[in-house]
Length: 248
Image 1 (cartoon, rainbow, N blue to C red):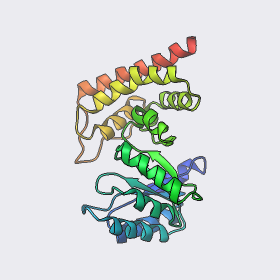
Image 2: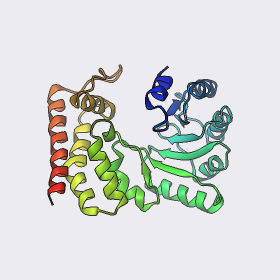
Image 3: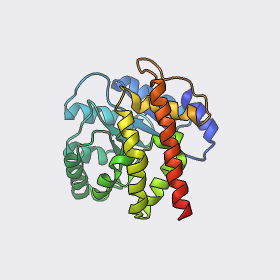
């Protein structure tokens, strides 16, 4: 129902990717339901609970990719961590188009990019920085050749997120550093003040910008009143940084 609502609301303006996780059977079921609901692609979440070996992970994602005609981006995080050789196998699998990295091991990521470039050179495989507040680490990821990233800040401060993305694309290091120093680093420090704040602060930010999206679901908890006030000040500071840039 959520995927269908997103598809109807976006009406083809942007692609809709649906999550598909848990064990293989449920992941396949959710993938097929997402395809029926009109999703444009899948983000394959880690399997539920177990820490599997590389062979089991490969089988899981290949079965998921074969279940629908949708392109699949595999999410590396938590209990789904891949060797470079496994990612080469994923890149060679029909339907799997990319890897989203939520682990943050730059050495592993560099070896992975190198292995795929060497052993599967004909595959147009995509890499995404999927760390929380990815802007904070995107300079490092860009040096590895990973130019794509997901932005939680875009949900509640799209003008700041777009300005940062534009500055990265245009090699405007002055703007990149100004936003990192004045907005993103303080936001990450605020995010570290509570468990689950990578989600809870985003929803609080959306509410601050005037859209009532409700509270986070348990077991997550809402940020404190003081932290919400700090978030509001941070958003104002980010806006001021953009205004100052426009005045120059």
